[in-house]
Image (cartoon, rainbow, N blue to C red):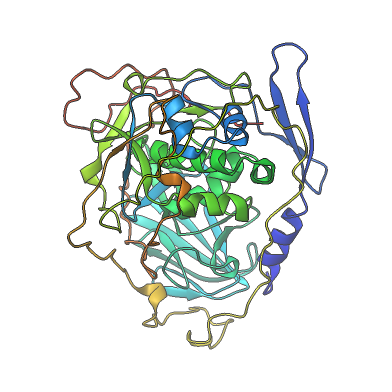
Length: 465
């Protein structure tokens, strides 16, 4: 696996184009079909369950002049907006179930305290006390080192958020991911987990859930509303002991960095930290394609997750002033059916970080045995915010004279640069995951939050058209 191999694979994936959007003549259900270079097709949409935000309805409203707050107020009646500080989320990668985790990178990365250089791969198999590790030449080449570790995680060369493509970890034959990748046992079966900064995660979710090209058709505010709903849904999830959520439509569609797009990345960053809450608990904000525009769902009819105070406080001490604007005249807008050929560009592979010592002898039986004191081996902790408060602001009443709110203005201060991932800990043995079902209505008043028992949650959504 030579230098640049992973970046070249990403370029080839960037050739995928949206081939067609088909509207059924009965029922109006739409499907998106993505064409990959090998002529395989991936169906990524359905009609949806109709609860909460309608992605197609949100586009229509955004094109008619509604901003994200007004869209959210329409679909989550009784919810409020609040802010949380930087945090991470753990995602179960379902396609990796019962498999060894095989990882490469265009940069140095670290496993079991050892450096793995470009052109090599690491293979992790979970054990009751950590993981068995094998380092090979390429993904399937000669074995260079074997051992075991009590730290079943692979770390990129540099900690922090929004890292470039050449520093990301890529599963051999699969997708690339920000953050760290690790393994766990689930009743004796191997599982792969991606722990990643929440906004970095959403950069992969939003373009998999909505069409980035809607931003070019007046739908930017719909993408922002989607980002807030998806952030809330992820933080309210508690599916497994070793991961909060998963990467399929059972939870939220997440393909790592492979479908990231600058337009949806802007939507995530512009709304960074903003979540929907009810009674000071994160709202499990369900959404779907709902081609008929969907029906508003009272926030009281949706499950809630952890308390707002369970998360770091917002970076800024307050929120921007809510503008008072004349409500736009609602207009009926057609649901877009045009293709969206635009795809994100991916930087070419870069040479490894010159601050990392060059690997001495890649043929040595114990490669990378030294553990250099670099940021890649550190365990940074988010700085504790001082004098910060979480602020709840009621969403505007649908149809009121004050329909617009804070999402129209970008955040005044981004998350602090260099905030890294806390070294995660995964239990070796875990109970069975919770399957899906229809959520029960929460009791009123809401009791203190406790993680849900293994019932079966409803599907969050179906993917949009």
